[in-house]
Image (cartoon, helix red, strand yellow):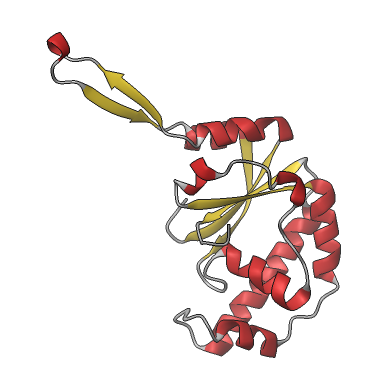
Length: 178
């Protein structure tokens, strides 16, 4: 992910999720040297190629607003009782993705529609965001930060509203939410 991108939203087919997880693992290749000396270890990384082949980028978030995508997850759950984590995909072994210092969310189209309906019906109050932001230091004046955060939630709602594919893959910077 680009350094200014804190979350990517991609489409993926359900059948390709296992391959995505597998491709996120670094493949170790031991190369033999002359008479057993000078052995060389190489690592092959196919993750970005797999993303390019099997997913389609449909949106991005920058570092303005919620610093991490997981902050949106926490805010919506804490203040609006909206859970972005879909139980169906919680059994996936995410360790290889976490080793890349990333988190992953997979949401099927039915769950995305449910979330879209829930998010479209809420009103985000400045006071809620101020309370949420008290524990964080985002480096922006509170009034600017709130504008960016509301915009990110609006963008999320629009993205969810337009999503019609099989599975939404949200790739984001790692936090200790998992």
